[in-house]
Length: 120
Image 1: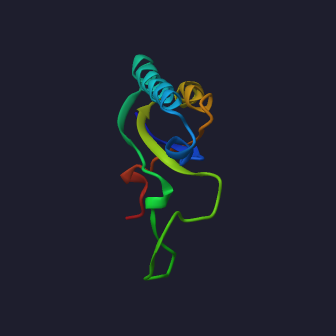
Image 2: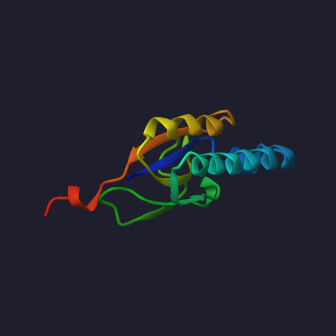
């Protein structure tokens, strides 16, 4: 099976600042349904996490030695979390991801590099 990373992008801070408790409860239930749907369809979740607000982010720019507060870029879209999934059917994984996009979060799917693909 091939491993993929499902990157959750969008206004990640809205979960912490703009959503009511009821909206968050519904959102978490939908993420639970997403996970259950992946497993039910034969995909294997190998990892993942929800991330805290971007106000807690720390950043080091390329070539820099200075640590700064805040996210990497000033943007409306930030990383809110991720899943790692093993599958042979990436199109079906993307179909499952529509559960997430219906909540207003974006998804980027990236194939993970297999160690055999690295330069030796």
